[in-house]
Image (cartoon, rainbow, N blue to C red; front, side):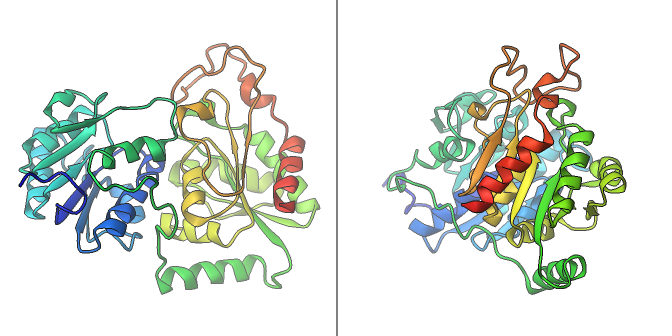
Length: 348
């Protein structure tokens, strides 16, 4: 009998080596598989950086770190990861990433079903192809892959996707106790970083906003990775904001968000960390637009953008420099307006 449903396969692998935010937005896939097929074994193959996110899932049996840029780059790395997928006994391979490398990995596995997007590189190598719907949210876009199998629920599982270890809970609680010893102020997290320069709301705006927050009895807390440390240090020195950039791991950062009142961020990975954490979020969009599929999914959220500029959007991801040299899409968004929007959200 031909296998064609979520019940039929005993083992699944999910392959996604895209950016951190993209990986976060696939965390519903293992949860939904297990909701239908509780005995299924699930493996997740991702980048070293994103591995810590997937290890937070209570539904994933094994996480494989794929260092595609260094230790496992090239064709030998492709063969190596394909072998690891086969060693897991994968019967159904799901591939949200549309790169040539990901398709070649799928091709070299022995999986019975290999599901990818019709827009993936050399997509004809997949046994099943889902239509890539450009203007759908990434969560539901990725869900189309799972819907290629019978008995897939109408909606994905979107809650309870991560669990925190006691060690993480304790460390974050201690951090919060140190910066808010009397538990009398609200923590507002600021994430000023992005891989793309034009997607960054200017440092001056973040500094001004942090000052406004402090003067209104909030505690602004800066987060980010190693690349964000210079800008976070500058914002902190100008405003007095608490700088936790580089001092928390990704799982600790997500746990911090779960215990904060709100996140203010660029169109970048923290937007989607907030979704996993159940944290309200304000996302600032400049060269990109929410219609690309990466708007915030937290239950309480808002988007700040200048909808009157004809030059938007200028790129699918953003770019290193504004094509017009003005970056008006970002500079026209004021700290005062973001603060007003924040108060509106908190009142909800």
